Length: 435
Ligand code: 5CA
Image (cartoon, rainbow, N blue to C red; front, side, top):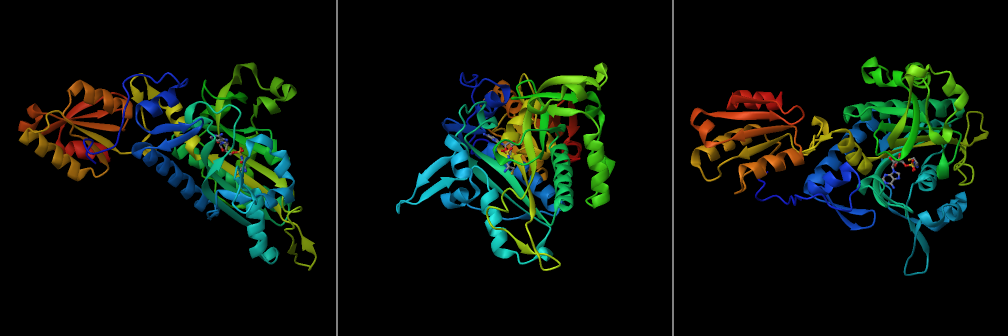
């Protein structure tokens, strides 16, 4: 992609409305633009990141055995009247009336809808267990939308819903999602800690939030420092009930809780040197709530002995759009964003220091042909401006080509994360970037 043709409106100054670094950088690097309080448009570069994160979330949901569906954003009010949440949800729900005077709403979550969809399609206990998920925009009329996409009113969520015969089955589903989440966040380059959490308007009696450590986070947290050292994914847990039980045991052996669930007695048993308190960003939240939705919505299936069973359910959310902000909070410096390789919008910036110079243009073209996932800065601008924009936008690699190197067929390669620069032949540069 040629930058001269690309829609990438970067800003030199820090926008005054942005209070935290990820929000500032998302505006400055031209990822998003606010359309109304807590409502954002995603520009080309931002959308590429959002899509990459979404894809990693999807792959790990699929690997855990969940099946993707797509439910609408608009829901009929009756569904929510049946579960009793229509009134309970209060002002956070965006209520809409259609031309026939029917009460509708913009979905803040989908427990009711998925329960009726499953009820329509499932016949007996043989249809269990199932886990269905979608990745769809939600709307919550938050009292205080802030920090850009971190606390938006419209936001992209992955929400999965599990159906099991009984509590024991539901626990396996819950643990499978916990493992899928740990893998997902690790692939995104984030260190997430599962913490015992409050259930809020979703309800139920078992719940964990997945928290990324960050001073700007909205959650107050207490955890055992031992969590920071463990590499969960390489531990090799699989999706069998035994393996999941072992994994869950490991996860919950150490103290970790949000302030709403902080237990001062259990906390006192954590050695003082390992006690960590601080703030974090909630990037995921999982719930087990038994028959809270299946019972009122009439989901009942024939059991093995012919007697009806009411499936036990859980729901599992990931804040996909919030993750874009969370990744930036975790990975930036004074000059801009530092994208972790798996979510970077492009792998490399190719910086042409002298567009119009035939040898430099040819050198850039030869690099570009070998690194398809690139953004080529072919603008007629000063070198300093190009370097500043490349650092701001934060692609993992920069390949810098100028007339001097062109004569010798050499370019400079810079790793954004470390600032390390080396001069290499085109062949070696390409190998370094693609390696
Ligand atoms: N139905 C359940 C699980 S699918 C549910 O809605 N859970 S939730 O309320 O905890 O939301 C799931 C995730 O969405 C949160 O962990 C958070 O990462 C993200 N999220 C929630 N509210 C917002 C918001 N206002 N802006 C951005 N992301 C949000």
